[in-house]
Every structure is written in structure tokens, then in C-alpha cells.
Image (cartoon, rainbow, N blue to C red; front, top):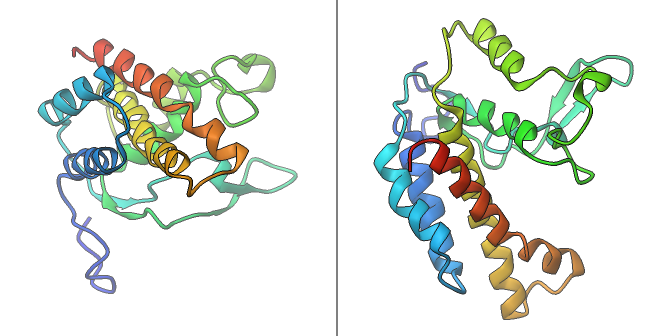
Length: 199
């Protein structure tokens, strides 16, 4: 996909994951409150193992069921919300972020790992990958474990920013404090997938 002429400053078409790993590493470092061995290992490993970007498209940046509005009587998506992280990039970024629902417990959100997916009519991840490949003309997708490692790393970096604000006293809500306690588990989950991907 060529860069849209109507939006010349929308984003750079190549090296999406390289740029994102660099961005979230810098964000994490700016809000770092303690040394986490898991994050240190990921910061070293992710840039050395970046997947090749073979396609460029508009990337939402936070594409998940929580950011979609569906028709009340069908599975038709009527709108996608929260486009502030959108740019040009690798479409596997949005796909792998949606796919994280299959490796995340529900907890009242969009995770489906611990739900009875068959009873709910939710396909297994392998079928979702097959459907995505069929819809996009791909033969397969690269090792999803790398993408899961990256996405959990990114989330850990985002939540670390909240943790720093809680410590600094600029985010004092109970929700912010609760969120801030998720950094270490997210980093651990990221490293778990990195190890599966060969770290």
C-alpha cells in the first residue's frame, strides 16, 4: 500500500515493529521505577528478532473488541473507536493484538482464554488465524509468540507509565493504583512468550 497523499504526515510505511519497540522502550525508561529483569531481557531481545514487515496498511494501534461497536442483533461491526494511536504500519500489529484475547483470561474484559469458547460460539485461535489468512490472502502468519511477547511488553510499558504517576502522586484513583500493580505480571507474560519464540 502506498502512502496516502491526502495524509502525508500520517506515518512511516516501513519498520513498524522496530519503531514501536524503540518507542515503548523509551517510554518505559522514562517512567521506570525499579529494575525488572524480565523487561531488561525483552528490551535486549525484541530489537534483535524483529519480524520482517511484508505489508503496510493503516494500523489502529489499539484494535480490540472493547474498541468496537457491534449491531445489537448480529456480529456486524458498526464502528471502531479510539484511533489516536493509528499510523501506517504492519497489519499483523492489529491482528496479533486482537488475538491476545485468546491468551488472556477474561477478568470482565475481552480475554477469552478461560471461557468456554465452544459454548459461546467463539472459534479457537487456530481458526481465527485461518480466517485472517483467507481474508488477507496469506498462506500463514509468522510465529505468534513473538507478537504476543511484543504486545505484552508494550502493555507493561504503558502500565509502567501509570505506575510512575501513582508513585509521583499525579494519578491517585483506586483504578490507577490497581492498574499499576499489573506491570510485573505483564512483563512476566511477555517474557514467557519470548521464551516460546526462542529467547
